[in-house]
Image (cartoon, rainbow, N blue to C red; front, side):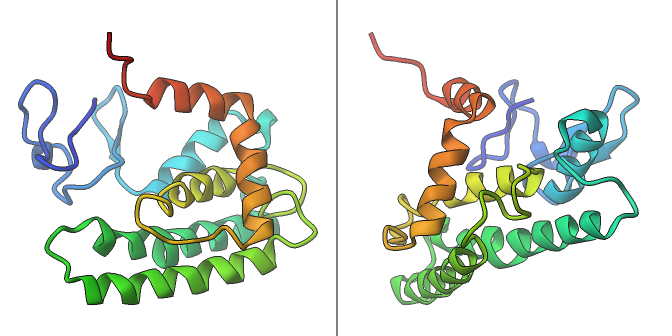
Length: 177
């Protein structure tokens, strides 16, 4: 199901709040009607469905808890900090504060990525996918990360992945004729 983040309506007009009372995406609904509504829980569930892809370390390992740590950082310190920048009612002074906070977070991320391909080393995980998605928001929100070489290299690597290319193509608006 596809929900508008502006109107909170599905394509058929259904009020999205009837599906997720929190009112935000993502929501993953199962055939039996159960739902997961938080990104970190959803991406871990997805990773656990295809363990051979190693998108998440095995449950119970220290590495899995490191993944959870990354997902929580991205959720609370990066993703959530973008919210005011997408709010037209937020005064520009407040947006400037949030841009500075996000740039500080990205500088720290740049240090963490030094000498590594991905957040957890050489294995791409769901945390990398999540970071790629939210980092794409830096340009439209006027956060200049061009000087962060490790973040830039990370974005190039992630953007070159075939699955990412397919997802971006599927997400692209249809060409106008």
